[in-house]
Amino acid sequence: METHNILQYTVVLLAAAVIAVPIAKRFELGAVLGYLVAGAVIGPAGLKLLQNPEQIASISELGVVLLLFVIGLELSPQRLWVMRRLVFGVGFLQVVATAALIALAAYLAFGLGGKAAVIVGLGLALSSTAFGLQLLAERKELTSAHGRLAFAVLLFQDLAAIPVLAVIPVFGDEHGAAVNTVTALQKIGVIALVVVAGRYLLRPVLRIVAGTRIPEVFTATALLVVIGTAWLMEQAGISMALGAFLAGLLLADSEYRHELESQIEPFKGLLLGLFFVSVGMAVDLGLLLREPWLVVGLTVALLLLKALVLFGAGRLAGGLDRLQALSFAAVLAAGGEFAFVVFNLAESSHVLDQRTHDVLMLVITLSMALTPPLVIALGRFLATQQRKPEREFDRIEGDAPRVIIAGFGRVGQIVARVLRAQKIPYTALENSPEQVDASRRFGSTLYFGDPSRPELLRAAQADKAEIFVLATDDPEANVRTARLVKRVYPNLKIFARARNRQHAFRLMDLSVDGVVRETFEGSLDLTRQVLEALGQPPRVAADRIARFRAHDEALLKAQHLVYDDDAALIQTSQEALTELEQIFAADTTEDGGGKEWAGGVNRQW
Image 1: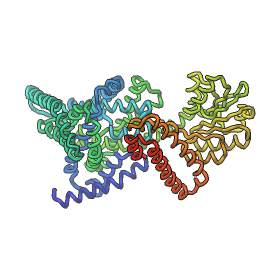
Image 2 (image 1 turned 120 degrees about the vertical axis):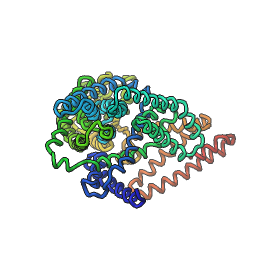
Image 3 (image 1 turned 45 degrees about the vertical axis):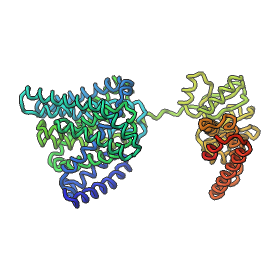
Image 4 (image 1 turned 135 degrees about the horizontal axis):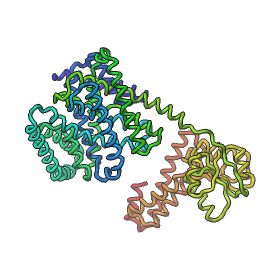
């Protein structure tokens, strides 16, 4: 490829990605779909800005190679053991059941040969790791029940892709069984050689490179390990992706795993995006226009069949409820990036003919394009199904309390435990039904209700209480409740939790009796431990923290007078820092014998 063509290709590819990906993400369609659409628009079937996707594909396949390397790095034996039931139970069930059903349909309904049908079934059984995890992350569902199960299934699919890629060249060998056996044994020997060499050579090499303390040399070494192993495997007639995966797997439990992952990640993201662009360029949109019913019908059939299997696997083996299983199925029903690699390799190995290959590539692309809108629509539907009927506030009974606690989260629970241990009567109010139910399981006595409602405060006998502890974690609700209590029950002393200085200022405006910043004391204790670890004697460190506490409390009161004036706030902060430095410098001089730790203090402050 000539130099000016390389520059033209680079400019067009980067411009397409920069335009298409933000638009796709703006509409919650995901970056992968943006790359696919960008490739279709600039490719031969679109604006014809780039005419030869094969040249781009040869480079972009490195994206999949790097993805497999990172996946191998993440597959530590400990992690697999912890997730073994989900990975090898649900994951195995989903892949085998989906592949068997699709292979059977391809063999009986479309007349594919046995080997081709098996490869089609296995390829379509795989979902997109990049696409699925991105969708879950964008919807903040990675830690949900269906998100954890989806991750486990994707993990097994990534593992399953390796033997599928390894077996395709053997399927495509037209020689006899004896030759196939010899070829297979040769490839197994190469794999064993890579494993042994990697086990005993990679770590010493990385240790030497790390000792140079030159980041770019470590980056180059990381790329050399991945690309070099992939090239070696390709020379032996084995998938490059398999080589990269083995390299990652060999380093999964090494001390350089996280450093390698951080060095590879930028290249992986860029090249994987380029891979999806090349796939979009190679999509035959003319085929969709010529045979729309076939392509659309196969796409819908794929989504329905995979969703059905995933729903069943999630319910029967994954322990999901009906709504969670629906979300799980929607995220993983589409085809994935490994299917593109599998079918490209199958076509080049003559396992699949050109037309079957083109149809499958278009079906996978359309299935991925349909997934984001389907997930969004399903999310809205599930939101209506999960909306619970309005729960009535609890009826508050019992004697008048001395203390009312508004909010029964981390702060309110500690206050309640201390009061209960001293048999001081209190009434706790919490407006989250989930928090109420969870706390009651541990024997806590509290009532469901909104503490900012006047009728609830009357029911809690606020007029007879002495103290009102405002421990809600919502600053707006916190201030609103404080204003109400101050107005209706002026004799009630209020002690409030503040999230930060601005929140504290607003509470101080209401003249509450006590304001406690929620992370202040914990931060001071952490700082004291840091100072001691730096060599300061415990007595000196404690004195420093006590002086800082008093200084900051005074600063808080001073800044409360000007907190709505940014310029004044900045000026008082700078003056306070200078004053604090002078206080610590004077302390060091007065102490006289603290030369060893004084320098450390001055550097830190």
